[in-house]
Every structure is written in structure tokens, then in C-alpha cells.
Length: 480
Ligand SMILES: [Zn+2]
Image (cartoon, rainbow, N blue to C red; front, top):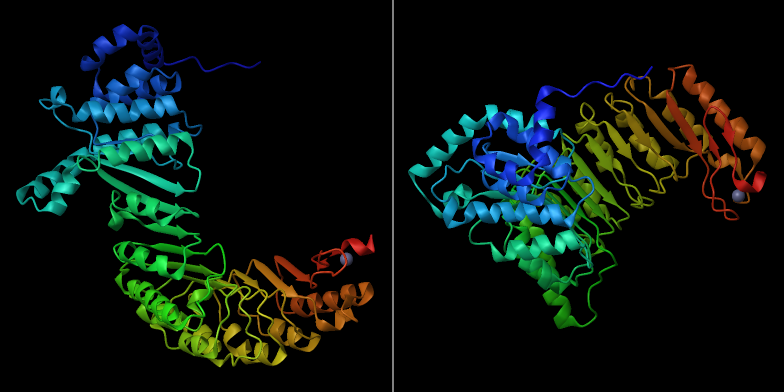
């Protein structure tokens, strides 16, 4: 029998209050603070626009985080939230005590009730901070004393209705509120539009920036000015949407080079950067070492993928202190064939006590290069994942690699290329694939028990699939 938990007395009281909107509005002033979150949640869910608006204006806690309530954004309720802020700013509310310091619109996972309850308890600390700030009112502090509105932004060419409304609302209140964006994603939006937005939001509050743009190298110069002000960036993802190349006209090329150098120099402003991802950033060709040289912090993640690297870039890896505590190194699709990998080996030695994830898929390395890395690879005792797919290794060197892995006590995911001996005229031989992969598996099992291991062939030229050997053999479509 399904017995439903009966509603609590408080829930019944809240529902009863909201049944009559006029009465609820009348009694809001006398509502105990402890009931605000429950009433707000119910009013939000039932889309009582006027009550939501009024409650934001008289919110008794320092913070109102509504993200958990906005899983399916609704423009009307969103407008009500912002109208509530407007009411709070109005004259008739000036005599009231201003409790609300932060309106958090981010759609992040948390429990609405817990946020309110915790904030209620921590209210005094926030108040103390504000009193401290009130001692000397520098422009920066004055900004912080304003009500903060926090949002994450994903800016694409076509904004949805809620975003468009919000950004328009923001522009009109830039002098009275403090706008913060924690995660900003910019997709192919014209720079002029981005400029308007960056002029309103506090650049120092941006912790994560993702750039996917079609800007030219000269447009990059304009962005560099804002980029350098994002001093508290923790995570940066650069992934241009098309290959930006230098002009063939000498004069333009000089200006472009200056623009790129200016952009690179901004990396020295980032005091908190921990995770750096760059994919297909071809305009930085032969200048990656300059970026690494500008870094002020020790990175946890370095991801340089699908990039045309140079020996000079690679040489810099072994002497760049910012990389000496890496947990995650990702060079997928960066062709290392024909380069001397001793600097990479030196880097692996530096990070042997910290590196957890190593991704070298599609680097087109050959036996002698893997051989150079083996002594360092074997010492990486913290590895939980290694991906070496799409490299050209023979049976002999793969066996040697596996024999060097007895130190890998934490490894969970291992991805290796199928040995070159599996191929006959560039096609996978079914029998040899199964036989050789099973031999490699036996080699490894003699040393330790793998958890999640796979050997994969190159992509089949006929069906564009791979043959994969795990505990069982999974062949490409051509064999079915
Ligand atoms: Zn096939």
C-alpha cells in the first residue's frame, strides 16, 4: 500500500496563505523570516508573480539563490525576480533595512532551502564584512556595497528570450547594481556586442571563460584589453571556431603579430589560473612557449589539443615551473612525430607525483619516442587514466610499456593503440588483432589486474569504425 507522507503543519499554512494572493500580500510584512524560503518556493512553483516580486524586495536574508528553482526557465517568473530587485531599489523601500546583498541567478545544483537556511545563519558574518567595507568607501568598495546580481552567461548569436530580457535589464541598471558573471561562454558573437556586455559585468569576478569565436587577429587586440582584467580566472578555454591565419600582406601581418603578442602578454595578469585548455589555436603557432612563459600560477590542467607544435614549444615544457604540479596533461591531436620527446620525458619526471590523467591520443608517436618516455611514464604513480590511442607502436614497445606499469596502482582507465602487427596492407587482420591484443593483456595480467582497459585499431577506411579489444573483441562493421 502506498502511504503518502502527510504535509507538515507549515506546508499546510503556506498553501493556505497562498490560496488568497491579496491576503498573502497583505501579511508579507509580518511573515517570520524562517517562513520566507518555504513561501517563496511555493509562490515560485505556482507562479504567483506579484508575491515573488514583493518577496524579493523584502527578502530577509543576505542571499537569494534561485538557480535550483529555475530548471525550466520561465520568462514571466524571471521578470518578477528582476522587478523585485527594481522595487528594492525604489524610494519607498529606502527606509527599510536592506538585507538582500546577493541575488544569485545561476542554474547550479543545490537545494534552495539549504542555501537560504545557511545564509540566514551566516548573515552576521556578511554584515560584519559590509560594516568593515563602510569604513572607507573607495570606488571599488562602493561597487561591492551595491546589491550583487550573479549570473552565468552563454552568449550566442541568437539569445533566448530570457537572456535578451536580462541583458537589456542589466544595461539599464549598470550604475546602480553590481553585476557578476562567474562562468562566461562566448560563441560567435560580434565583438561590439561582447564589448557592451563586458563593460557592465565585473571582469574580476569571472572565474571561467570559454571563447569560441570567429574574430580576426586584429579583433583579438580589442578583446585583449578586457581579457587582461579577468585577473581571477581559474579556468580558460580557448577554441577558435575557424583557423585564423596571418595575412600575406606584410603591413597587416605586422599589426596582426603585434595583436597576438598583446593577447599573449595578458596571461601574466592571471593570478589564479589553474586549468588552461587550448584547442586548434593555430594563431599561437610557435608561440605556445610564450604563453607558458607568462603564466603566474602552477597549473593543474594543461590541454593543448589539435595544435601544430614545434620543437621550441616542446623544449619549453621541461623548464616551465607552472607545469610542475600538473594533474592533467592533454596533448590529443598534437602531432609529435619527428620531434625529440626528451623535454616531455623531463616534464613527466617533474609531475610523476601529481599527474593523474595523461592523454596523448592521436600524437602519431612511434616506437623510439615511446621508448624515450618509458622511464618517466613508469614513475607516474598517481595515474588514474592514460590514453595512447592512435599512435604507431609495435608489439615489442607496447609490451615494454606494459611491463613498466607495475607502479600504476591507481590506474582505472587504460587506452592503448592496437599494435602495428595487426595490420595487413593498412587493414586490420581479425585473427592477428585478437591474438596480439590477448597476448598484451596476458603480459599485463602477469604484473597487475587492469580495471578498464582497451586496445583500439586505427579507423577503418571502409566503415569509419574501430576494432576494439577489451575483455572481448569488438570488430569494425566490415567483419559483421
Ligand atoms: Zn570496417
